Length: 183
Image: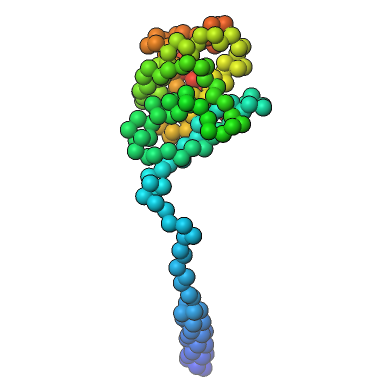
């Protein structure tokens, strides 16, 4: 009697497994693969582009805002820090934004040491900047927020014509310590 129940249970399990296998097999064979074709082909030049965020001041709100920019990956690979700071100096493409950097600012040098980028700017960066701490911090964080978008950068030290410890003319903000990203 026990053997009959065992065989009956075994047969029922076999039938259930067979039915499950049958439905799985039936459903997998019905799938159709549709090949996706883009509406527009991507050129080789577009493939070499990468997206970066540059921080500029909004003309209306005066707050820092990112501007997304597609740039050639080759220029970014050679010296990304130099490229990004120079793009900030050139100014935004968006008409609603303006450069936070003082006019006439030039980039003397830029290098990375560990996770800190050292940016050496011309004296024009600190001349005629009696704007107060709030506006001067926007000038600083335009650079800092742009460079810390790169994963290897955690802080930025600013030099003026190769000298450390300089400050804006009004003395509100000095450059003795590196600046970390503003949240």
